[in-house]
Length: 512
Image (cartoon, rainbow, N blue to C red; front, top):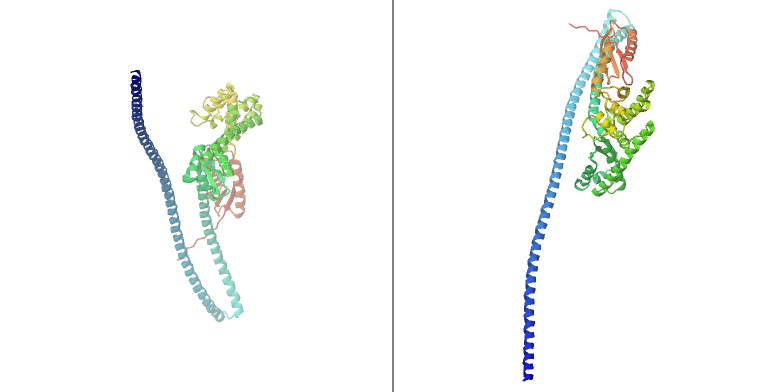
C-alpha cells in the first residue's frame, strides 16, 4: 500500500508540474502578446509624431524659402526699376542727340547757302572790278597800273572797314558764347557739389584687388552682404565702378570698423557669415582699444593730466566725427590751444582753460539717443568722470545754453567761435557765399563810369563793363587796380579774385 501511494503521489506531482509549466508558458505568451501590442501602439504613436514634426519643419522651411524668394523678387523689382530709369535716361540722351544732329544739319545747310552767296558775291565783285577798270581807263585817262594802284587802295580801305566790322561782331559773339559756357560750367559745378557733398561725409570707398570679389562679398542669394551689414550697421553699395565698393553710414566709427573688417576678409579670402561675424567682433574690439589709444595720445600731446578712461575713449571717437566739414577732434585740439593762449594773456589758469577747451565738444561723440544738446550731454559726462565744476560749466555754456559767468566760460566760448569761424575751417554756407558775391559786385559797381559788374567762377573773377565815354583805355587799367584794392580792404575771401575791365566801342547806323 505504501508503494502504491508513493507511485500515485509521484504521478500526481509529475502531472501537476506539467500542468504548471503549460500554464506559465501560456501566461508568458499572453504577456508577450500584450507587450508586442503595446510596442506596436507606441511605435505607431512615435511614427505619427515624427511625421507631424517633419511636416511642421517642412512647413517652416517652406515659409522661410518663400520669404527669401519674396526678398529676391523685391530686389529684382528694384533692379528692374533702376534699369527702367537708366533706359529712360538713355532714351532722353538719344533724343537730345537726334535734336543736336538735326540742328547741325540745319547749320550745315545754312553754311552751304552762305558759301554759295559768297561765290556769287565774289563773281559780282570781279565783274564790277573789270567794269571799273574800263571806266577808269576811259574817264581818268590813266594807265592800267595807276588804275590798279587806286583800285587796290580803295579795296584795301574797304577790306579794313569790313574786317573791323567782322572783328567787332566776332568779339561780341565770342563774349556771349563765353558767358553761356561759363554759366554752364558754374551750374555743373553746383550740381556736382550738391550731389557729392553728403557722400563725402557719410561714405568711404574701398578698392578691391579684383572685380570677382564683388560677387563673393554679396554671397549666395546675398547672405554675405546681409550678414556684414547686420554685424557692422553699415550699408555696402556695390555699383558698376570697377574695383571699387562704397561703405555708407553716418557713424564714422562704424564705417572705419566696416572698412577694416572688409579689408581683413578680402585678405583672408574666407568670406561667409560665420567668418564675417568673427572678423567684425575682432575689429570692434581692436577699435575700442584704438579709440582709447587716440584719446590717450591726444591728452598726452596736449599735456592734460588725470583724465578719466571714459573721456579718453570719447575723445578717440571725435577723430571720426565732423561738423560742417571740420574734424571735431582737430577742432577740439585747436580750441584747447586757443583757450590756453587766451588764459595766459588774461592771467587765468591755463590748465583749466585748456581742459575745458579740449572737452567742450565731448557730447558730439556720445550716443545720438541721449536726450539734450551736445553741450549738456558732454557736461554730464565730464561731471560723472570727476571733472571740476568750473570745467563742467565751461563745457555746458560754450553755446550760451546757460549764462556765461566765469572767465573760463567766456574763454571756451571765444575759443570755440574763433576756431569755427577762421577762414577755411568750415564749409561756407550758401547764404555766406551769396552775400560775398553780391558784395564783390557792389564794390565794382560803386566806381564812376562802371556800367555793369558780374561775379563769375564762384566769385573768383569780377567782369566789369565800363562806359566808353567816361573811361579811356588808360583809365581802365587804373580802374581795375582801384577795384582790386578796395576788394582787398573790404571783403574776406579764399584764394584770389581776378578783375577784368572791358571797354567796348559800338557804333550803330540805320540803312534806309
